[in-house]
Amino acid sequence: MGAHKETTGDPMGDGVNRAVPAPAGSGERDEDRVARRDEAVRAAVEQGLVGPGAPLVCLLDVAGIRASAAALRAAFDAVTAPGTPVLHAFAVKAAPLVPVLRLLREAGIGAEVASAGELALARAAGVAPARTVLDSPAKTRAELREALALGIAVNADNPQELERLDGLVRSAVTRSPVGIRVNPQVGGGSIEALSTATPTSKFGVALRDEGARAWLVQAYADRPWLTRLHTHSGSQGVPLSLMARGVAETYTLAEEINARIGRRQIDTLDIGGGLPVNFGSDVTTPTYAQYARLLAEVVPGLFDGRYGLVTEFGRSLLAKHGTVLTRVEYAKRAGGRPIAVTHAGVQIAARTVYAPASWPLRIAAYDAKGRPKPGPGVVQDVAGPACFAGDLLAEGRSLPLLEAGDHAAVLDTGAYCFAHHYAYNSLARPGVHGFAPDGGGVRFAVVREPQTLPEIVAESGGAHASSLTAL
Ligand SMILES: *Cc1c(COP(=O)(O)O)cnc(C)c1O
Image (cartoon, rainbow, N blue to C red; front, side, top):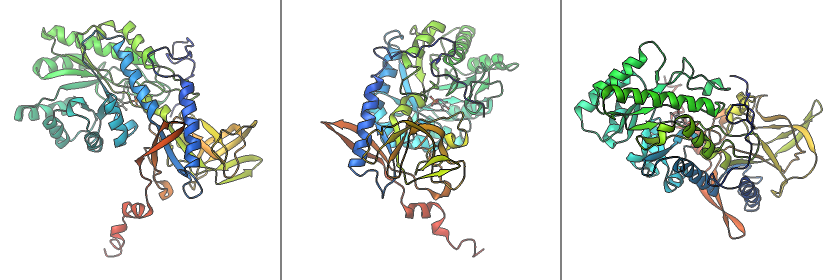
């Protein structure tokens, strides 16, 4: 994996420092979110959500998620011609939790799914088929058939998938809008594993490959039911300027296809997600408003009302609203370095543990009562419970010295972290609770129960204990 060379003060990747407070309409004040988090940590300790018998819990800030959803909608409303259909579809993979999908649904956000499992979650949350988009590079015939039967939008990844769709569309009537995903090949960002628009990315039709453009024009000309064009050209580590270039290439292609066909056959552009998140501080940057304004500058035709729009943001809607709270079980020293041994490690933050340079996470120190821990910064490691040496969430980090019985909070973990459990050492999936201010206190609601030991046994072949000895 590449090194993490993104700097938090330069979200656009163009050398201009825009680390300024979020303007009106782009959400709430970052300080309010931090204050809610501190309150929630204290309440989680007071109410026993975390304690000696339950040393690890995950928390989601419901007000924060609502504010981000509102900021996303406001950002695009501000640059889009009145009456333009815009569907913001949350990338379910970022936080595959049914109550989160329902919360987002109530906030006007649909779902982008990429597997039968994600589709099942979106349906369990009550997300309407008309507000659901299916993307995946490996859709089976059965998955495609189901999506078309439900009327879910489908983006074909490649020519072979398009052929399958030909057969299905011929054999049954569908309301599903169908498009093709293109890879504009504008280049990658600082994290190779997340760069979707490199020359050899596995996603979509590679637009700059020989013959690809002509093939695409013909594919649309031959199929009047192909009405969408899709790209997802960014993700964490990709500068906004590059994402906008990918969208611009896609827009230009849509214009070219419609001009060749002589009518506005492509009526909707799906511009994907990928807004990066600032993991370096509590400042929300870049904002949806910044990205929407940049798109309006670079691709003005995108917003003039001729195209409906779909977006697929994931990380940026959830990351800053999740906190992993863990008790410090022991505090020890090795080679002169203090080490806080906690219950949060590789099982809740696999990317950080295996690629710490690309995925640094902030840790906040709280005392035994859940109050922010004062004291001078002491260079220490914050370790997880797993039995391998690399299971560290922070190495050589300066924090108030963590002691046994204190709490460590792993910040910005609402996306691609604790909902992506990694079952190393058969560590149990922790419980997840949403929180909201309630009078002077904090109210919690269960999002997901912690995994039980019988469940771990069952998921580990418990029902087949003698299957191998009987062979
Ligand atoms: C992962 C993914 C997204 C969401 O990306 P984020 O970086 O979480 O915003 C959107 N669209 C597609 C096709 C994806 O694969």
